Length: 428
Image (cartoon, rainbow, N blue to C red; front, side, top):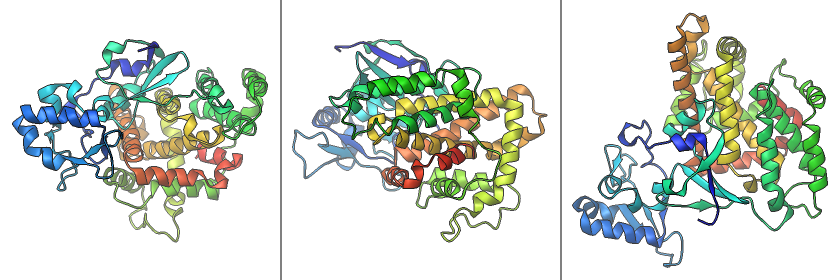
């Protein structure tokens, strides 16, 4: 390649665990094939009775496409279980018999995400993959960006980066790096660091957005330098107020995502188990459209008590989980997909609030509330729970177009630009 490659440390450790994976990727999402993908599978068909047997059912041409289009064909899934026809006991027959180089680009590159950023390419990963979630969330050094070698990548699928001729594209990387830098500040917890990103996003969005026509460089530098002053950060921090009851609109936003209708089996099951872990919820209707926020308000006092107890006992490790989750958002999602930084940070805060509620409410952690579980066993429970919560939520978001559109529609509501509402959501 024409530029060097860097990778987040957790991606240098990532290895697909194949049939050992608890939620393997050969299921329940549309995998498009370009013409080269299609021709590679045709070659495999000629050499493998297994591939030949399933090819007609597994690979379908797009009738409205021509050979120059990226969506030349797509993979079908088995109607009885939603798995790929080539998948056998959690392992792809093509991968097993012909290696990674024979796979379609999406299959070969997922969960890796490679983008160009100025003078280098950058590789992160999708937390919808359980093994990526483990490597990212559970290691203190996971989010360091290090030099990586192109030889580690059998295939490439380069996503658009931050470059562009307009001001939004020119400064996108610089802006993103400033936000990521806030997560390196010592002496603050993850919630406080995320509040700093909210403050900065709100401040610069008035002059840095897709619609900007005046060079924002001078104003950006001034905004960045302000947040380097610890006295200034202290004044900002004092504006956070998480002591009162949750605000109605922020609670409604959270309820919209937690109690989303539809058939996202693992996600819906996780949400149901979480609410069932609280006393007095047996009669709750989690899908009552007339009062969608009631389940959250019913469990609110007990939830806040759990959150305080678990943070007191295991706060340092829990803060690492959420810090890595939020930092990875800046690599997994992309600033260019939002109209302005505030909309982008609002989505991060919504994701953080969902994951935080599911984690602290998870039935796995109820035994830890007594503080009597041995340290090693407690860490194993905490680790397993955060990986499940993050992976299930991100799988539902990443691999479900309807869910993603639902969330992005919510993000366009004017209330999601309100500082007080976003602060309340962050502190939920």
